[in-house]
Length: 247
Length: 297
Image (cartoon, rainbow over all chains, first blue to last red):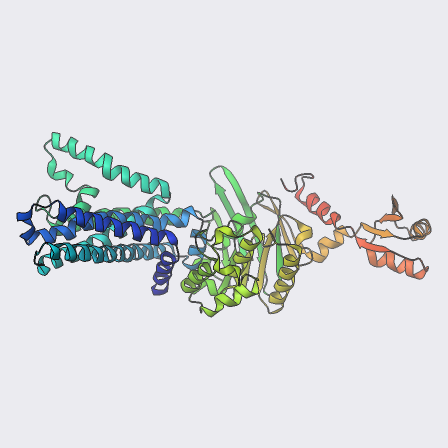
């Protein structure tokens, strides 16, 4: 299992697209952090909560990118036909799915690490220029939540990829769900006075992991809901992958 | 050893493989032959655990592929479809496979050298020619130094030199006692390589025989060229052999070349050419598969 996991990480490292993703993540992190500090009123910059929010708001795009990386980790195999070679080395398909989930978690956490370095650097320099003291305890609280969010997003992405197999289908489906269909569901559920239910939907619960406000589900409950959606996607991934003929 | 027992595979209403049974013994190279769409690739993928049989079973080294411990070290496979990520270098592709299979990294450079891709190994696979891709696939199959090889159309895209190298290399591996199954849709292509042939058509077994037996079926047609073609034709007729003039001093004779050579030598007839008509192997193949003119369809 260890060497299969290491092979998955090597697969990621040896593709230029991975480094491209990393670069996009860096730009996102820098821009979001700079925009956050720049858009904050001068009086609010000394609120220690600000630095907690800077970390988590910067972590949101990282969580979305982790989700997409998780999807690509699995669907790349089917898109480029490498699945046959992978399954020759890992003929037990449940093990294949488990290794992919672990790789998704690792990829998400690594992506978040890269982004947090940029967030920290940007925030430290800018806040230093503005003479705002660093609130390390508040920031640290945001950092570990961000890591958990990215790792879970990577796992969820890998599970979705394992259930769908088609790269275009999975990526477009997830983005359409997150940014079109689920917001429509929120509106509809709101009209039906069921706002509480909307918080249990996949994108809302994932957003709850990096939510810097105190609205909606608690952080731990959001983790539980995301794990629940991940479990559903994983079961589908196992069923789909076990039944699939590699022709 | 590879065993296929009563294998049936249906894709919807299409029967790709129909109650197929055969085995491949250690130390032999078995050619797996049939026209395109005969079910060869599906059978090979079933052996490798990539396709789930509808009925029947397959085994490698006495167990199902998925039950093998360290399968990449024990079974090497080359699939007809290309299976490397186009954005990865050939060398990195093999490094990933080596890591997943628990194979030492040094083996990567060994197999790259073996298939003459040492220099090209650093380039991304999407720039590879068909022949280079095929050689990379062979390198992947050989990576674990396996005791069983399952190669789907291994000669595809190789130049004549490459085909000759492959033939000699596979013969060497078989001599070490390894089990080798190679598929082709051209009998003549594998005739000099294999010991046995399994011929299938429309998913069904047509014949499992020694290659020598198949060649014997084809040996009825030999081309002989001589400056004394008319005299030779008479001598062959006296020996009750059917010889037909095909122009330019050539005769098409329904007899093995050894017999014709002996008659010519005994009578002092000079021969400029004595060759088994290789096309006749294809005729045998087409006759066995029952549909002349379907070759390559």
